[in-house]
Image (cartoon, rainbow, N blue to C red; front, side):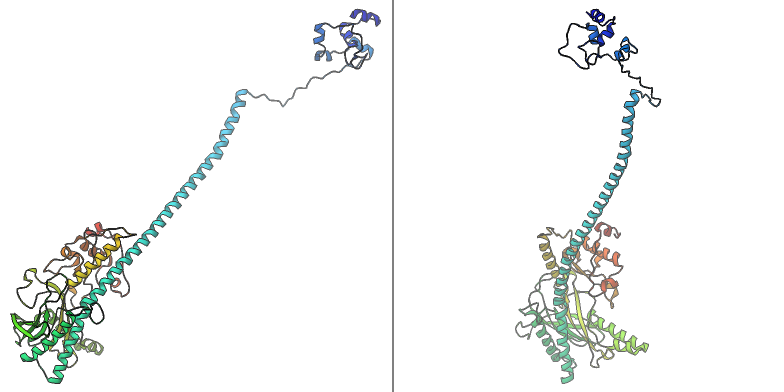
Length: 498
């Protein structure tokens, strides 16, 4: 059929040319588009049908169809790109991975270092904050503890002043005034027994007022002295004494006694002790007598020492010093072991710690004419008793909120030390009393606080000495300047300070 078509056209067309003239093929010269009404008497072969759209067909140049002035489309070949480089597959896969790892390292390492520095700074700030909080809490606890301890010490100080200092002072003033009045008005020299007996009764009146007072701890009735008496330079002695019901316990009213000893210049005199009527103090039955030499007792030697200082000052020629030393002074005696005025009682204990408040007798008003001493005795068991009461109060307070801390004699003690003793420097550091007096003090013996059998008392005393150097250090003796500090108990016991 194709050949017939070619014959009709007036020539023989090749198969490829016949295809171009197929009226059913879009784009042929004969028709520019598909004609649905065109005759379909020509059917190309399957092979030709498959190759109709082949690019090879478009690349054919100068076909017989060119004779019919048909323009053919020629696709030029791509020119080779001289800059085109081929990359191996392995390299194409590995290089991005390596680049990503390097990028991660360059980003992560500084970030990790920054995070580490931030973490360290956070820990430093946290440690500083914890230390600050710890210091603040410690400061609050120490301040509260210091306040509790200061309150306890102040209560003890007040009790000691009321019970130990004031009663002897009032008693001494009373008896000194009576002696001055008797000498100036009546001319008494107390050489006769009657004069001494009258003065002893006056001493009993003052002591009885103190011992029978029912309103203790007020301004008019603050405590009680144990004995009140006067001793002259010729060994005379006259006065009164009250005996507590038992030693080292609370004081209670017991039998009063009157004291009398005649003159015996330069040697011991004979002291007579009489029972006194509890209502009016009249002399009763004779109780006991024993030899005594008043001018060699601690109370008398205290004023003798002051008189000697006045004489030394007068020898220097310094008028201001002479006037200061010549002025009559009240003075505490050194602490000593007190024995009752009567023998046989409390003898096995070796004596009780005691003090005597003394004042000189001198009609001229200075130490140039001293001829006697008035003294009032007080035992220091009351100090330990008040310290024990303060310790029990402190124990009760610390058991409650917010402390919840239990005090015991193994971990705490309140004690008093003789801090200053200008007249008797050898007694600085002497233990005066302690809340646990049974374990801290030695009966019948004077001991320093650093030598106390109580480990707490001894260690604390050593810590104070290691911290301040001496009991009379300026930091400790400055009035109104309370001192508190912490120390290691173990180091203090071993002689080290921290």
